[in-house]
Length: 163
Image (tube, rainbow, N blue to C red; front, side):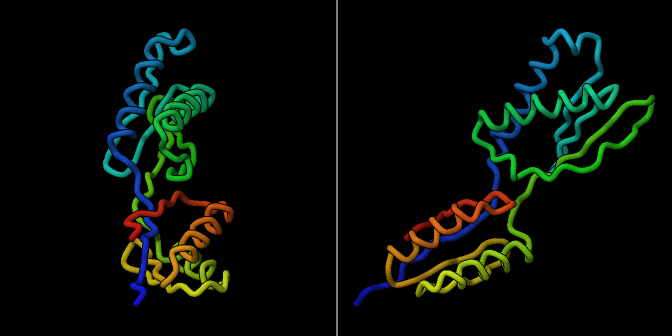
């Protein structure tokens, strides 16, 4: 008898890589000429990154440096949800980026709907902040993974626990 094969769809970010990217970006900001004498900073607080600078121009450059470092370290930029640029004390600008951890209910429902639309003989079940996809044929599971990669979803996801 053929046994069931399965894999999980999760949305998680390696926090150590994020921390390393923040440290690299901070180091680069300290040495760059256009940030000389600037109070630009990147803070990591729980699931958020807070960028602050004197004006929106420097804030935009700081965000660009951070995104470059994150991409180099293999952290998907889709895992960050950027907030609005806010005015802070002393005329400075601040922007908050929330790091996604886990799939939201809407995202999970969207993925399950896409999987069912393929017509493959697989079952998709939402389990908390992840999705378990199971089926008898491993080829069907690989087809689901390929379909989701081609779908170019608006959030970061990874297939894990492939059995």
